[in-house]
Length: 88
Image (tube, rainbow, N blue to C red; front, side, top):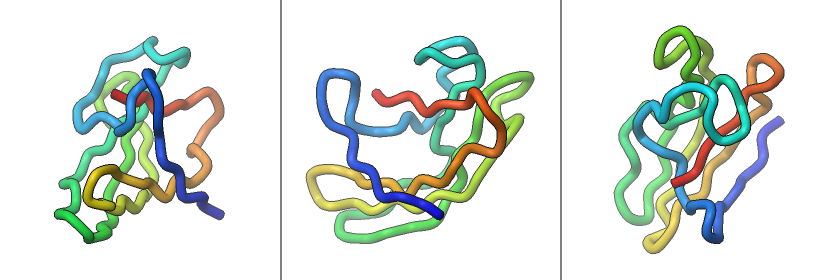
């Protein structure tokens, strides 16, 4: 099952919309949002990719809600161990 998450603090508040590279953010395969972000007040479904041997070696579904001044993400468990999402 998934969980809605809002990122706050100096580590970043959003999941990047570009592949940040491998071996960053304390993981080997780094997660990033590979779909269009929603407009203000909307929620969309998209793809969370994990960058390893290519920019989307593994992927999972995700939902993103635009709460006007911040985003919240419906995240599901990663498809394999040792995958993490960065924030920017």
